[in-house]
Image (cartoon, rainbow, N blue to C red; front, top):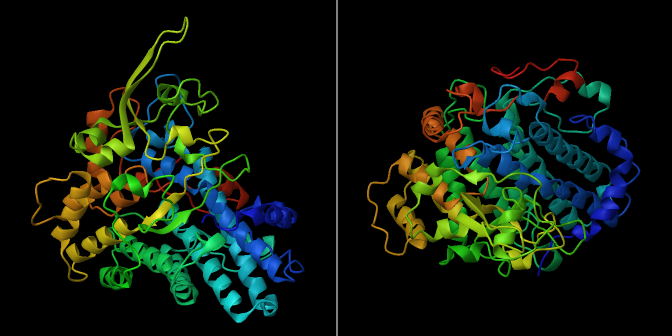
Length: 507
């Protein structure tokens, strides 16, 4: 059965409507709703509202991670598109709607988690002990998740871990990354201790102890990455052994499976499968709880090339095409390429309208057009945030970095041969080879930019790609280490009274 209890969301949104002024001032977190939490139903609605912020997460990752990376050549042929400044490494990104949304949405989630945790401490006696512990674990998982997103994109961010009045929040400057990581790690450790191993029925999709442990492993390997000489997510902390221990726990639990067929991982009829540790749940059917992320990289022409007259499914934007470099990294017979990309497509002629041929490659990993909902924002397919193949490949990364023992070549070949059944066996796998395999395996899953930052060669990789693939000469070149994180949104700089110092390299 699907889905996490999003049916409570309408009530949850009404509950939080009185706090919209505070939410609009992110990261201001106000304790202005102390009388709401009087029953288990109230707490459940508040928790659902905290989960609901996840709904826009995949859209952000497809822009701020995939479009930013060498996976997408997001240069328009029909004028300037809003996402092009992200693709082109513009120094004016502080005014980008995407950057602003990444900051404000994550702080909205943090606000809701902080209020929920505060009310659990004050009024949690209306719950059973089990329910209170689980809610604390879920709220801390979500707060950690939102702060981790912020650190990955912005580096230092204001640390607010409890409801405060607006005047108090205005005195909080950007907090050193190390301190934000401390909170993230504590929260995920608590979540790992308090959460259930699995759920059934309508609770499927909630964070489990294994999701918390897997996310903590991802945090550890991210923090262990190179600093690149900037104040970003990589701190060079060498936490690979700690990550490896968590990954071994997940592997040894035997609760998750490396599915033998790649397409089955993303099938509309096989959601919540044994690959999934944590995903974001969606429901189509005009409920307002459908997903928009499957459509945002493609236009109406792609849909019409598959099923005629699928009007209403265009983004109103232009194709964000896969880069030539990405296409060429796949073997022709790699099933992962077939799942993720449509390299060239044609809209048949209709009446007096001639056929239209698009030579570029469209991202179709999550698109099963006959299973579309009522509009381009109404897809039912869940977005997988963390899956078992990633657990295995993070394990391989830890071993390569000296954080434990394991069969790196075995993991590498298992992953490769799911894509290409008779792929030559790899021996002596290197870190660079592993990262390129991750690129093929997780394309379109929002991981590429974060993976690049774990490579000491991130800037060189991007500069070499831009020099080769920027055929329209629109991307700023060369980029430098300052471009590896995003600027603080201009709206937040102003709201803080310019208390925040802008990240170097941005106007």
